[in-house]
Amino acid sequence: LAKTTQPISMDSYEGQEVNITCSHNNIATNDYITWYQQFPSQGPRFIIQGYKTKVTNEVASLFIPADRKSSTLSLPRVSLSDTAVYYCLVGPDTGRRALTFGSGTRLQVQP
Amino acid sequence: GAGVSQTPSNKVTEKGKYVELRCDPISGHTALYWYRQSLGQGPEFLIYFQGTGAADDSGLPNDRFFAVRPEGSVSTLKIQRTERGDSAVYLCASSPNRRTSGRGNEQFFGPGTRLTVL
Image 1 (cartoon, rainbow over the protein chains, first blue to last red):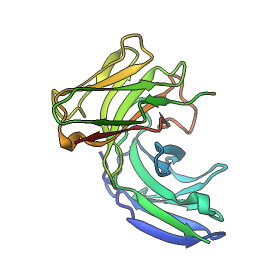
Image 2: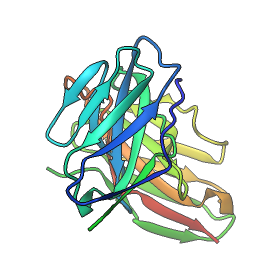
Image 3: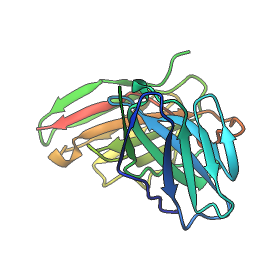
Image 4: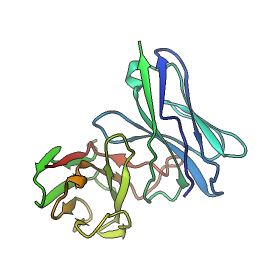
């Protein structure tokens, strides 16, 4: 499985755009990049998944360069409620398989 | 609709005791997963069921841990002779048989059961 590296923590202010970058130098050809969000005392929640270039949904955007060795989760205009831990995962899009989580990035949004 | 539910939300037990943790997946979801999360760490995979059978139990740490899903819906994680190191949040997740395009790695997690072994 490709190993991922992401910052331990980040700080931001309300209304700012937050970009969290994840490195995955050993990503395999059939691997996808998936991001999850976890609030305290809750289970993780799927945010977005992509293979290459750019993916956007109602919550976030995911930017993946051509070499796919890194990816950036972009959260537009964060609010206090975006304070959470964000996990970057890399693996095949087989649907039903064990997910491998790292330690994630703890995002703290301040007023 | 209802999400994944887990009971109890908290469980305190003594070292050496037996515990059972229950997971009710989203109705119709054929795949069910158990994870364990220690403080400050990401969830760690334990076991995955496809229907009634365990498709992958490679994450179970030792033979004190066992899980069942007899009717392909509710699952129970069983821990024998609990140890203090078993203290963690035990998370359950489920996913549907039919994947949504662009969301193939989406699993729906419950709130977890916080297990404390004294």
